[in-house]
Image (cartoon, rainbow, N blue to C red; front, side, top):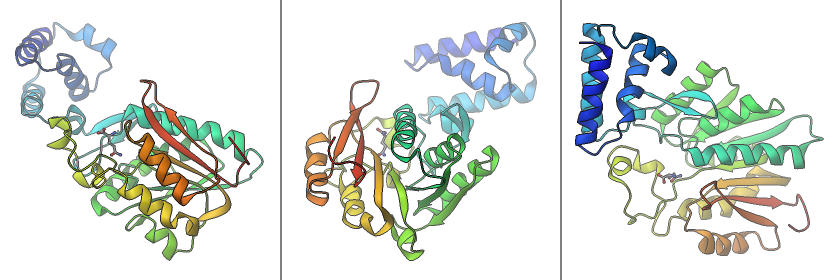
Length: 287
Ligand code: GLN
């Protein structure tokens, strides 16, 4: 069978089952180690037996409901390829915006710092921590996760991408408190989906629930962080979080309770949804 025939046949099957047709090419590029433009030059070549088998087994997993990112074992985040598996959340586009917005604020508020201490709590695949470490050389980056399995993935990513990040295992802020660390920038994308919220099957059936669900109203981990974060930040600090698009009112209440008179802002993602929270702790008087 030629590459063209295999792709055509698979696209038709995906279409029949109302699945994303692009997956056929995406999976093929990945398994054949080709770039999209190279695929067109090999359309009339025969597909070798091993590649054919691997392709069919990947397609079967996809049709059975697994995300393509876990099948490939990779997802691109901030222009770099991260290893992912079922022990970590798949990095999302929205989270690239969080990274970008943190980088802007580093320039705005920490321009005159020689070194900046930053932590990422609940790092998962390490996407946020590693991207920041590679994008801003003034940063010393520490990342934590409660999951040993997630930390294995994050450490592998740091090594493969050449990022200098220190990893600690433990629950939320505990490893930071135990090691008496203080940060200029505190970052977290904690689990924030309310426990009873209906989410897409492909997410619910495959991604780690420990990385998704944040208690009855989704704010469990933010409140936990807000309650003790002052123990691990400097006198002046930036706190940066990803949040759920429907959490603005609850989040404002929580921030105003734990950080009275502290300027903060909630920023929308490119889809116009509330997505990021920045708290300017002693960094400026008002917004
Ligand atoms: N944005 C993710 C989703 O909607 C959730 C990420 C999180 O809980 N931190 O699937």
